[in-house]
Image (cartoon, rainbow, N blue to C red):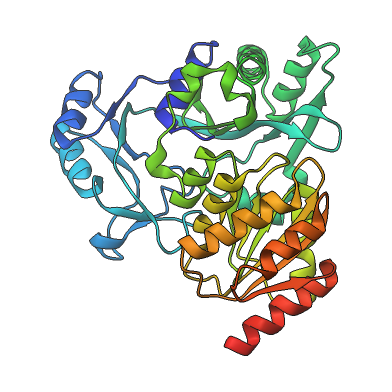
Amino acid sequence: MNIHEYQAKELLAKFGAPIAAGHAAFTVEEAVEAAGKLPGPLYVVKAQIHAGGRGKGKFKELGPDAKGGVRLARTVEEVRAHAADMLGNTLVTVQTGPAGKQVNRLYVTDGADIAKEFYLALLVDRATGRVAFVVSTEGGMDIEEVAHSTPEKIHTFAVDPATGFMPHHGRSVAAALKLSGDQAKQAAKVAASLYKAFLATDASQIEINPLAVTEQGNLLVLDAKVGFDSNSLFRHPDILELRDETEEDPAELEASKYDLAYIKLDGDIGCMVNGAGLAMATMDIIKLNGMFPANFLDVGGGANKEKVTAAFKIILQDPAVKGILVNIFGGIMRCDIIAEGIVAAAKEVNLSVPLVVRLEGTNVQQGKDILAASGLPIVSADDLGDAAKKIVAQVKAVA
């Protein structure tokens, strides 16, 4: 789960991270009111969407010459004008895709005189199973280009969970940022506060870009992106309250209500599978046969008829889906239950695309009998390879 920048900053401030004053706004008048609470005379008006690249983004409704989603204002009236431009309009960035995201919230912050911008992030290093720091002197909007063109400017190190964050980790961050004296001490404190926040909130990522040095010599978190491990949210009801469902894909949001793991992809064959590994193998074999999966969908090991029906509806909400491949191994989940769910779902949604089903495991023959007796044009497959060949052939025949 992701949260907005202003929420991330408020959260990190509780752990001691240095944050500039700022206030969220949902209307133009609230943005003006927020500016009035700040010392000024420089303000920053920032669109709040779950995507990066806001500063270089463009608003669909405002034309190619309009400013992006992060704007400076030197008067309260400029804050008003920027807020009126942004709220309710669609911001397109490199991370939103061409559809963009509608801006429903703003963050009005106090401006800062920036001397230097850095990049500092924490994430889970899957290779080591540890929390890793990613540090660079080249912060700002072009960090992706830095990673591509000059990767030697990005430094990474992991923290041993047995010791936790130690003074030498703080010195490593300061050294990577080429800071000394008081600024090195500040960098160590910032790094320690972020590590503490990462563990305490079960975060999956904390990205500070930029971490700035002001003209006064102080380190300041100017932008923050924080994501959390969704499996841990039952431990953090306060964080769960920060969820903005309008920023999430409607199909993924619907899937979460039924405890389905769903991720939309760009292909045309919908997949319904039980088990993440089996789902990955199913997607791979579809590509091996010349087509592309439209989604990742894991119904889990204990799916029932209701979940299967919901899964079918979610898959078919995607207009790009031209066929569906169901691949189920009946271990905990019985094949006859899955078959009943498939038949019920196909009838309820008035299925109009080819459907190939491969069942294996507990009560597999009963499951196949249910499918055969349904009277529906469901194609049964003997194994995964056979299923992939059949769904690809069915989709191509229809096309």
